[in-house]
Length: 221
Image (cartoon, rainbow, N blue to C red):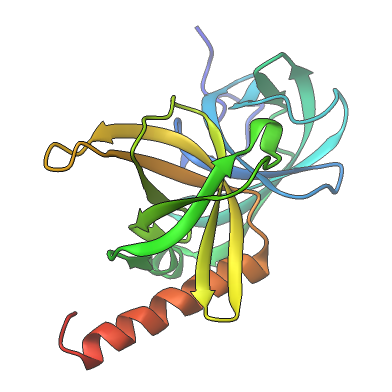
């Protein structure tokens, strides 16, 4: 089996600075927009994530959060298959956020029902008209999409959130889990947002904070 990426003389990175197995990382290849993917392996050969993200030899930046903080790692693509990308062991890893701050930001969440819309997004591109949907558990990383029908795991969808009366936000998400709500017979899907831009991230944080403040002012939170 593989030796640990952080074991042996050739490695120079502590385990706490590396992405964790089955966690999510934001990846930019060749300076293109960030995409959120799952870590499938961390070994002496490098880091393997889901999805084909580029071509062999392209430079890549990986941004991720561990219990030790938020990090940025510089690497290159070593191999690409139909469903995975293998990155070389990182050349450099930089701390870009303290552990406490990262945990606080990740915990920003709105446990309330919100009206919105959804549509399929095969290949990461939304198609067709948005259908009405109920959305809850909104956070910086994802949300719960409640529908009358079940969706398969790893289905790509776009969700539309009405943040203000004059503005909405459309985000790409991947179905990571599904469960049937026994009381109503509806289907709840846990979505993981992908490729979120900084301004979209900030818009969600501001939206959640405002809604929570409104709920507190009415004694509901």
